[in-house]
Image (cartoon, rainbow, N blue to C red; front, side):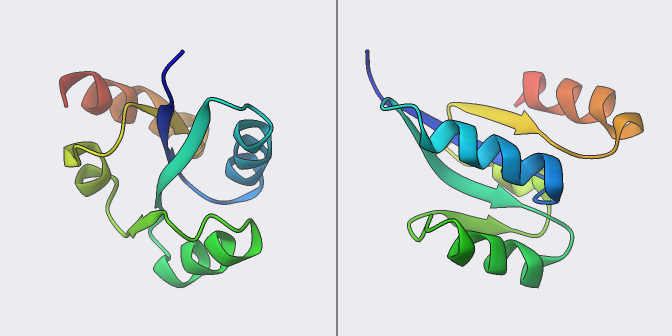
Length: 90
């Protein structure tokens, strides 16, 4: 299986659990993080040693990136549907 390049949208508690899960999978690599609070995203990037990941302040920019194969939407529930639709349209 080829490597799956993952983008995480939202780096709070749920996003961090997704990061931990993907890091245990040999064919998954986190390549992008997105959060409205860029400083928090940078902190999570360092904390979980995903130094090669690009940090975005706007998830639309992450979705527009050619570096991402799949995303985990780890934001409040009311944002899931519009973000999932945007991801499918990307």
